[in-house]
Structures are given as C-alpha cells and as structure tokens.
Length: 255
Image (cartoon, rainbow, N blue to C red):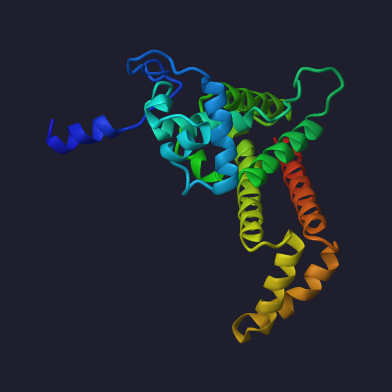
C-alpha cells in the first residue's frame, strides 16, 4: 500500500459507537466529578450557545473547570464529542408507538416530522453534522427504526420505502436547517425573528435588483397569511407536509 493510502486509511473515521472507540484511558485514574453524560450535556449547551465553529476541547474543558486531558480520558477526539452530542439531541424526540392500537400512520408521520424539524431549528449545529457521522447512536437508531415502522404501515411497496422516507425527511431537513440558520442570524444581530424578517424585507424591497421579484411575490405572500414569522413558517410547513402525505397516499393507490 502506498504512503498516501496508509495515511487515508489511518485518518478515516468510523464511529464513537463502534467497538474500540468507547473510551481510551490515559493513565492517572478517572477524573473526579466527570462522566460522559455530563461532558455531553455541556457540549450540547456550548454548541447551542456559541456554535459549531467556536467549539473546542479547550473551551469545553474551561466550561467544566478541568484540564483538556481530563476530557480525553472519556473520548479520543473532538469528533467523538460531536457525535455524542448529535445523538444526545435525538434523545429529545418523543417517539410514538407504531404498533399502538387505533393510531393513524399519517398522524404519527406528521408528529415525527414536526419533532425532527424542531430539533434542527433549536440546534442549528446539528444539520452540518448529519452527513458527517454514521448516525448509529442509540437515539438516532431508535428514531430511524420508528420512522421505518411508520412508513411501512402506509402500504407503500417495500422497494419504495426509502424513497418515501427521503421525500418527507429530506424536506424536513432542509426546512429545519434554514429555520435554524434564520434563528441563529436573528440572535447574532440582537433581533427577534419578526424584527429580523421585517428588517430583511425592508432592505430587499429597496434594492433595485430584488425589489421587482419581491413585488411579484407579494400577492403570494399575502395570500399565505400570518402576522409573525412563526405563523408563516408553521402554515407553510404544515401544508407542505400534507402535500407529501397526500403524495404517499396517491402512490399507494396507484400500486
């Protein structure tokens, strides 16, 4: 094997959840007052407050009031921490029971999609990590399993289940990601979401390059309704999700 090949193999990541990556002790005994759950909890809090770009092992250690080496007793790398944090937020989801009597798959699918969107909007650092890691933590796997079980109940053919999941949850991923960015930008400017929206629209409607397009869109936006950003986003999301559910129903009927 060439040197570059060996280097690529050595640097390729697998997952913190796979055997051999759980924890590496570095001597001196386990640091007092720390455990993986606390480290993960503080990691999530820092990522929420300061963003993915600002996160570092040194910053985490300072927040925990320990040395960086104490954190390394529990994880090998910063990526391990990010993967743990990513799975932790999936633990915020309240998963329905797909086998519960009298439950409609449509309601359960809407519930799962809505909760997933809220996680993405609440934790804007989650979306850039989604494709970076394998997504095989216990909370992520539990979510994936329930989604598959619910979509199976739609009656869609087995070879189309992944397509149906992609249609719904990649839409939600995009919607929640944009909403998360909007929230982060508003907060960075010291504005509420409504204040930032009004500011952005005022600036855009005054610019010659964008005013014409926005003027053409005004009637559509007025027809949508909603006095606040929250109302507008909720209406758009709910109806878009209804369109996807109707699409699944139509494809099932087509056989």
